[in-house]
Image 1 (cartoon, one colour):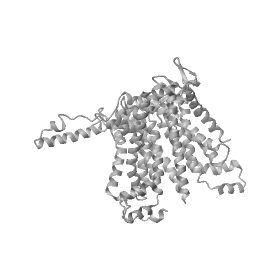
Image 2: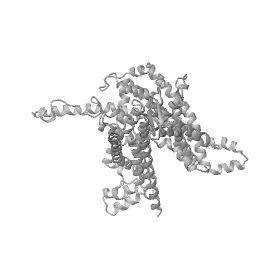
Image 3: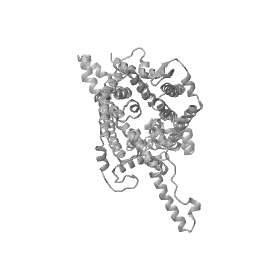
Image 4: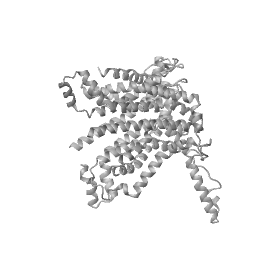
Length: 282
Length: 294
């Protein structure tokens, strides 16, 4: 369909991007989207507490954040939760994806619908439900580290693995079924086929899904806010309480670290996915 | 076999917690922590109290304006990306998505520094004011009558404006992506035909582009409206006392007010609204596709 109008070399009436107002809109939109974040990052290096006029470059707020025990503990908690959440979510998500891709079974629509519920319901509802559940079950929060983080980790897995399932399933949709016939013809057992064909094929999807789960877990505030206790604070919850207290360059420094980690992981995930897509194209 | 572990996980750590607050919403508070399940409807009746009804209306109003502003801002962005050279298109798309991957809390916090009384917007306004002041003095006019004695910072934070601004900032990528997806699929020869036959750009946009992009518009409106309606952080950090949304009331019932049955009822009303919007969308898209087939 697009081939009919694929001639993009001539500057015609459809060349909206080359019209001044379009460029202006695009430019202003990116200024709108990026300037608050850029200002936040730039002023984490600003040598002034008032945080508004540039007074010279400093990394002292990073040092200060590094020496803030509460902040570092929260960061360690966040990474621990994200680590366990990623492992379990990836396994559960891959299972859902394989099941929905490969098998037909009664109530499949219902199962599929239930698996998308954690993606669609408002975060606040899931947060309060988790809070009510863990307090009613009497989930112990007085355990030793890292077991005291189990409630938050469980809540994170519940909303992360459906996302992993979506990503892995998108990957599986491109699977060439002839590969299975070939493998079985050549005498591979179900297990061999799974280990030598399916797992390698799913790998880019699994990695992208795992990175997504890690970022979602690391970034989550609302659901964690309802499941965390005084001893189980994560980085976003800690930043939230600092923001409520006062706006300081130290928060900018902690935020910048979190932004960099997230952007790095996302870029890797996107790169892996596009590379996998390109391989398919050849 | 494969479906059992995730199924169990979802049941135990998702369906049961939701069922629990569903039951709570029909219960009554007894003492500090005890809730008696009496199948009472009082919690739902209380949610219809003008005080809470007003907050629901306000949430709809905020989410509605946010969706509309996002649609108006996102449409030119989506068109520009669609018609950009294919070389830079992925870069533009990535630029739209990247902020979306940044932590919601951090994005909201970044806005505080921009909007507050001594923030960057007011800093810029003060700079302009000073300039204007100097120009007026230069021309021998009395500035105090025209622009006031002193610069008064614009109240941009802790009010309804800040909440809507924050919601638009956070949800804009949600609107751009589905619009782009449907515009990208559009057959451009329709646009060429329309322009060839003498229609203006505006006429072409309204009679060709908008109808063809309708599935994307509907998806965008829904995936912007639903999270905006249930927003907690944006009104919490950027809003004033009178710009609370429904999620803030729910949070208060579960934390400081400690009235779980009422908070549960409010949560379920919010969820029913979400499901209603999604169901309406599903119905709409089914009808749309059957019309296309016919």
